[in-house]
Length: 277
Image 1 (cartoon, rainbow, N blue to C red):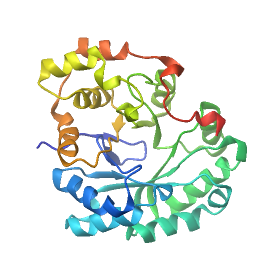
Image 2 (cartoon, one colour):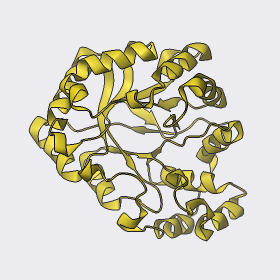
Image 3 (spheres, rainbow, N blue to C red):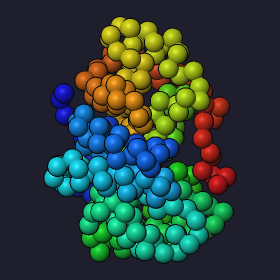
Protein backbone atom coordinates (compact mmCIF):
# COMPACT_ATOMS: atom_id res chain seq x y z
CA UNK A 1 0.00 0.00 0.00
CA UNK A 2 1.40 3.44 -0.91
CA UNK A 3 2.44 5.63 2.02
CA UNK A 4 -0.09 8.06 3.42
CA UNK A 5 0.63 11.65 2.36
CA UNK A 6 1.84 14.11 4.97
CA UNK A 7 1.08 17.80 5.34
CA UNK A 8 3.57 20.40 6.62
CA UNK A 9 3.20 21.97 10.04
CA UNK A 10 4.01 25.60 10.77
CA UNK A 11 6.94 24.55 12.98
CA UNK A 12 8.84 22.85 10.16
CA UNK A 13 7.68 19.31 10.90
CA UNK A 14 5.00 17.30 9.10
CA UNK A 15 2.05 15.08 10.04
CA UNK A 16 0.59 12.03 8.24
CA UNK A 17 -2.86 12.86 6.89
CA UNK A 18 -4.50 9.63 7.96
CA UNK A 19 -4.11 8.59 11.56
CA UNK A 20 -5.52 5.79 13.68
CA UNK A 21 -7.76 7.15 16.43
CA UNK A 22 -8.35 5.20 19.65
CA UNK A 23 -11.21 7.23 21.15
CA UNK A 24 -13.57 4.80 22.92
CA UNK A 25 -11.29 1.84 22.22
CA UNK A 26 -11.30 -0.37 25.32
CA UNK A 27 -7.98 -0.42 27.12
CA UNK A 28 -7.96 -4.23 27.01
CA UNK A 29 -7.87 -4.33 23.20
CA UNK A 30 -5.95 -1.13 22.45
CA UNK A 31 -2.54 -2.79 22.10
CA UNK A 32 -3.97 -5.42 19.75
CA UNK A 33 -5.93 -3.13 17.44
CA UNK A 34 -3.26 -0.43 17.40
CA UNK A 35 -0.76 -3.12 16.49
CA UNK A 36 -3.03 -4.18 13.64
CA UNK A 37 -3.17 -0.58 12.45
CA UNK A 38 0.62 -0.26 12.53
CA UNK A 39 1.01 -3.52 10.60
CA UNK A 40 -1.51 -2.28 8.05
CA UNK A 41 0.67 0.79 7.44
CA UNK A 42 -0.62 3.54 9.73
CA UNK A 43 2.18 5.74 10.98
CA UNK A 44 0.11 8.15 13.05
CA UNK A 45 -1.73 7.22 16.26
CA UNK A 46 -3.95 9.61 18.21
CA UNK A 47 -4.75 8.98 21.87
CA UNK A 48 -5.45 11.04 25.01
CA UNK A 49 -5.13 10.71 28.76
CA UNK A 50 -8.91 10.69 29.18
CA UNK A 51 -9.26 7.74 26.79
CA UNK A 52 -7.53 5.54 29.37
CA UNK A 53 -5.57 3.65 26.74
CA UNK A 54 -2.20 5.38 26.42
CA UNK A 55 -0.58 2.27 27.95
CA UNK A 56 -1.99 0.11 25.17
CA UNK A 57 -0.75 2.48 22.49
CA UNK A 58 2.69 2.39 24.07
CA UNK A 59 2.65 -1.41 24.15
CA UNK A 60 1.73 -1.53 20.47
CA UNK A 61 4.58 0.84 19.62
CA UNK A 62 7.08 -1.37 21.46
CA UNK A 63 5.72 -4.59 19.95
CA UNK A 64 5.71 -3.18 16.42
CA UNK A 65 9.48 -3.17 16.06
CA UNK A 66 9.22 0.18 14.29
CA UNK A 67 11.71 2.93 14.99
CA UNK A 68 10.25 5.56 17.31
CA UNK A 69 10.69 8.28 14.69
CA UNK A 70 8.63 6.28 12.19
CA UNK A 71 5.36 6.72 14.10
CA UNK A 72 3.74 10.10 14.80
CA UNK A 73 2.14 9.95 18.26
CA UNK A 74 -0.41 12.44 19.55
CA UNK A 75 -1.83 12.68 23.05
CA UNK A 76 -3.74 15.37 24.89
CA UNK A 77 -4.00 17.39 28.08
CA UNK A 78 -7.40 16.85 29.68
CA UNK A 79 -9.45 19.92 30.55
CA UNK A 80 -9.97 19.52 34.29
CA UNK A 81 -8.64 22.50 36.23
CA UNK A 82 -5.95 20.44 37.96
CA UNK A 83 -4.45 19.25 34.65
CA UNK A 84 -4.54 22.74 33.18
CA UNK A 85 -2.81 24.02 36.32
CA UNK A 86 -0.02 21.45 36.05
CA UNK A 87 0.33 20.57 32.39
CA UNK A 88 3.97 19.62 32.85
CA UNK A 89 3.10 16.86 35.32
CA UNK A 90 0.22 15.73 33.08
CA UNK A 91 2.49 15.51 30.05
CA UNK A 92 5.16 13.62 31.99
CA UNK A 93 2.53 11.13 33.16
CA UNK A 94 1.33 10.60 29.59
CA UNK A 95 4.89 10.02 28.41
CA UNK A 96 5.39 7.46 31.16
CA UNK A 97 2.21 5.60 30.19
CA UNK A 98 3.22 5.68 26.52
CA UNK A 99 6.75 4.60 27.35
CA UNK A 100 8.35 7.26 25.14
CA UNK A 101 10.60 10.24 25.80
CA UNK A 102 8.81 12.68 23.50
CA UNK A 103 5.34 12.95 22.07
CA UNK A 104 5.12 14.22 18.51
CA UNK A 105 2.05 16.36 19.13
CA UNK A 106 0.53 17.46 22.42
CA UNK A 107 -2.88 19.10 22.37
CA UNK A 108 -5.04 20.93 24.90
CA UNK A 109 -8.05 18.62 24.65
CA UNK A 110 -10.75 21.25 25.23
CA UNK A 111 -10.54 24.98 25.82
CA UNK A 112 -13.22 24.71 28.52
CA UNK A 113 -13.76 28.51 28.47
CA UNK A 114 -15.82 28.44 31.67
CA UNK A 115 -12.73 27.40 33.65
CA UNK A 116 -10.57 30.18 32.25
CA UNK A 117 -7.42 28.02 32.33
CA UNK A 118 -6.73 27.56 28.60
CA UNK A 119 -4.27 30.46 28.20
CA UNK A 120 -2.22 29.32 31.18
CA UNK A 121 -2.25 25.80 29.77
CA UNK A 122 -1.13 27.06 26.36
CA UNK A 123 1.82 28.88 27.92
CA UNK A 124 2.81 25.63 29.61
CA UNK A 125 2.62 23.69 26.34
CA UNK A 126 5.08 26.21 24.90
CA UNK A 127 7.36 25.44 27.86
CA UNK A 128 6.96 21.70 27.29
CA UNK A 129 8.11 22.13 23.71
CA UNK A 130 11.08 24.21 24.85
CA UNK A 131 12.01 21.48 27.36
CA UNK A 132 11.93 18.89 24.58
CA UNK A 133 9.15 16.76 26.08
CA UNK A 134 6.92 17.43 23.07
CA UNK A 135 7.86 18.17 19.49
CA UNK A 136 4.81 20.08 18.28
CA UNK A 137 1.96 21.71 20.17
CA UNK A 138 -1.62 22.44 19.29
CA UNK A 139 -5.17 22.61 20.53
CA UNK A 140 -8.41 20.71 20.18
CA UNK A 141 -12.00 21.92 20.44
CA UNK A 142 -11.24 25.62 20.80
CA UNK A 143 -13.95 28.16 19.97
CA UNK A 144 -12.67 30.86 17.63
CA UNK A 145 -12.41 33.61 20.32
CA UNK A 146 -10.23 31.43 22.53
CA UNK A 147 -8.10 30.35 19.58
CA UNK A 148 -7.47 33.95 18.60
CA UNK A 149 -6.80 34.89 22.23
CA UNK A 150 -3.99 32.41 22.82
CA UNK A 151 -2.29 33.45 19.57
CA UNK A 152 -2.54 37.16 20.35
CA UNK A 153 -1.41 36.74 23.96
CA UNK A 154 1.64 34.57 23.25
CA UNK A 155 2.55 35.10 19.61
CA UNK A 156 2.61 31.31 19.31
CA UNK A 157 0.34 29.75 16.70
CA UNK A 158 -0.85 26.16 17.28
CA UNK A 159 0.54 23.72 14.74
CA UNK A 160 -2.76 21.80 14.70
CA UNK A 161 -6.36 22.37 15.72
CA UNK A 162 -8.30 19.12 16.11
CA UNK A 163 -12.06 19.62 15.77
CA UNK A 164 -15.22 17.73 14.96
CA UNK A 165 -15.39 17.80 11.18
CA UNK A 166 -17.15 15.77 8.49
CA UNK A 167 -19.21 16.56 5.37
CA UNK A 168 -22.34 17.35 7.40
CA UNK A 169 -20.29 19.69 9.63
CA UNK A 170 -17.30 20.89 7.58
CA UNK A 171 -16.51 24.00 9.67
CA UNK A 172 -15.59 26.08 6.62
CA UNK A 173 -15.31 29.36 8.54
CA UNK A 174 -12.94 27.90 11.12
CA UNK A 175 -10.89 26.22 8.39
CA UNK A 176 -10.46 29.60 6.70
CA UNK A 177 -9.09 31.03 9.95
CA UNK A 178 -6.72 28.07 10.20
CA UNK A 179 -5.51 28.71 6.66
CA UNK A 180 -4.77 32.36 7.47
CA UNK A 181 -2.70 31.37 10.50
CA UNK A 182 -1.04 28.33 8.93
CA UNK A 183 -2.77 25.91 11.32
CA UNK A 184 -3.38 22.36 10.12
CA UNK A 185 -7.00 21.28 10.51
CA UNK A 186 -7.41 17.83 12.03
CA UNK A 187 -10.74 16.03 12.12
CA UNK A 188 -12.08 13.87 14.89
CA UNK A 189 -15.21 11.91 14.04
CA UNK A 190 -14.46 12.19 10.30
CA UNK A 191 -17.06 9.55 9.48
CA UNK A 192 -19.77 11.12 11.63
CA UNK A 193 -19.35 8.70 14.58
CA UNK A 194 -22.40 6.76 13.43
CA UNK A 195 -24.67 9.56 14.65
CA UNK A 196 -26.15 10.36 11.23
CA UNK A 197 -26.91 8.83 7.86
CA UNK A 198 -23.73 10.27 6.34
CA UNK A 199 -22.44 6.97 5.01
CA UNK A 200 -25.84 6.23 3.47
CA UNK A 201 -26.19 9.62 1.80
CA UNK A 202 -26.67 9.17 -1.98
CA UNK A 203 -23.92 11.67 -2.79
CA UNK A 204 -21.49 9.50 -0.84
CA UNK A 205 -22.77 6.12 -1.99
CA UNK A 206 -22.84 7.15 -5.66
CA UNK A 207 -19.23 8.29 -5.48
CA UNK A 208 -18.34 5.04 -3.74
CA UNK A 209 -19.98 3.01 -6.49
CA UNK A 210 -18.20 5.05 -9.18
CA UNK A 211 -14.80 4.29 -7.63
CA UNK A 212 -15.52 0.74 -6.42
CA UNK A 213 -14.83 2.07 -2.93
CA UNK A 214 -16.59 2.07 0.42
CA UNK A 215 -18.58 5.12 1.59
CA UNK A 216 -16.08 5.55 4.43
CA UNK A 217 -13.22 5.65 1.94
CA UNK A 218 -15.03 8.37 -0.03
CA UNK A 219 -15.53 10.51 3.06
CA UNK A 220 -11.91 10.09 4.10
CA UNK A 221 -10.72 10.90 0.57
CA UNK A 222 -12.79 14.09 0.74
CA UNK A 223 -10.89 15.08 3.89
CA UNK A 224 -7.56 14.38 2.23
CA UNK A 225 -8.53 16.36 -0.87
CA UNK A 226 -9.09 19.39 1.36
CA UNK A 227 -5.74 18.98 3.14
CA UNK A 228 -7.43 17.91 6.38
CA UNK A 229 -5.85 15.33 8.69
CA UNK A 230 -8.41 12.63 9.49
CA UNK A 231 -8.49 10.20 12.42
CA UNK A 232 -10.84 7.29 11.65
CA UNK A 233 -11.41 4.78 14.43
CA UNK A 234 -12.30 1.12 13.99
CA UNK A 235 -11.57 -2.09 15.86
CA UNK A 236 -12.60 -4.25 12.88
CA UNK A 237 -9.50 -5.56 11.06
CA UNK A 238 -11.01 -5.22 7.59
CA UNK A 239 -12.14 -1.66 8.19
CA UNK A 240 -8.79 -0.66 9.65
CA UNK A 241 -7.22 -1.68 6.33
CA UNK A 242 -10.04 -0.22 4.21
CA UNK A 243 -9.83 3.17 5.90
CA UNK A 244 -6.11 3.41 5.22
CA UNK A 245 -6.69 2.57 1.56
CA UNK A 246 -8.60 5.85 1.23
CA UNK A 247 -5.16 7.42 0.69
CA UNK A 248 -5.22 5.88 -2.80
CA UNK A 249 -8.64 7.26 -3.76
CA UNK A 250 -8.83 10.40 -5.90
CA UNK A 251 -12.25 12.02 -6.13
CA UNK A 252 -13.19 14.20 -9.05
CA UNK A 253 -13.67 17.94 -8.61
CA UNK A 254 -17.39 17.42 -9.18
CA UNK A 255 -17.61 14.77 -6.49
CA UNK A 256 -15.74 16.96 -4.01
CA UNK A 257 -18.07 19.87 -4.76
CA UNK A 258 -21.13 17.64 -4.32
CA UNK A 259 -19.85 16.45 -0.93
CA UNK A 260 -19.11 20.06 0.03
CA UNK A 261 -22.79 20.71 -0.60
CA UNK A 262 -23.83 18.33 2.20
CA UNK A 263 -23.02 20.99 4.81
CA UNK A 264 -25.82 21.16 7.40
CA UNK A 265 -24.25 23.95 9.41
CA UNK A 266 -24.69 23.79 13.16
CA UNK A 267 -27.40 21.15 12.72
CA UNK A 268 -24.70 18.80 11.49
CA UNK A 269 -22.76 18.89 14.74
CA UNK A 270 -22.81 15.53 16.50
CA UNK A 271 -20.65 16.28 19.53
CA UNK A 272 -20.37 18.91 22.24
CA UNK A 273 -20.14 22.57 21.25
CA UNK A 274 -16.72 23.67 22.62
CA UNK A 275 -18.16 27.09 23.51
CA UNK A 276 -20.47 25.52 26.08
CA UNK A 277 -18.03 23.17 27.82
